[in-house]
Amino acid sequence: MRLHKSVLYVLFPAFLCYYAAIAHAALQKDALYGPASALTELRHILPRLAVPACLSDTVSRAMDGLRLAVADSWLMRDTRPSEAQARRDFVALWADLERAPSRPATAAAPENPGYPVLVPGQD
Image (cartoon, rainbow, N blue to C red; front, side):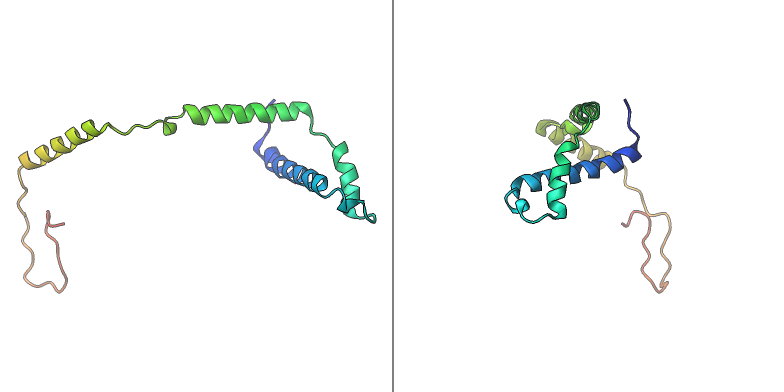
């Protein structure tokens, strides 16, 4: 059974409110036995509302699938090179840079343009 996102956007806050009200009613049961109020009536109504088992099973399966997908994703793996490999890469990079011919500046800068001008390679 698949649920659309819009249904989940409505059901998730409803479940949070439901369980928050149940928890509040459980913690405040002595205070709620006073005069009849909206909270006492809510306390009597909420336990009778039960989440359907198929819906809770679907949500738990979806969350298990999400947990597995995140755990198996490449984002959860350390792909950094070892310290020895990083050092070899660094040495190879500098060796390549030292062997590369330097590029001479091809265009001469104007005498006094009024603002600083960078020539190619002068960054």
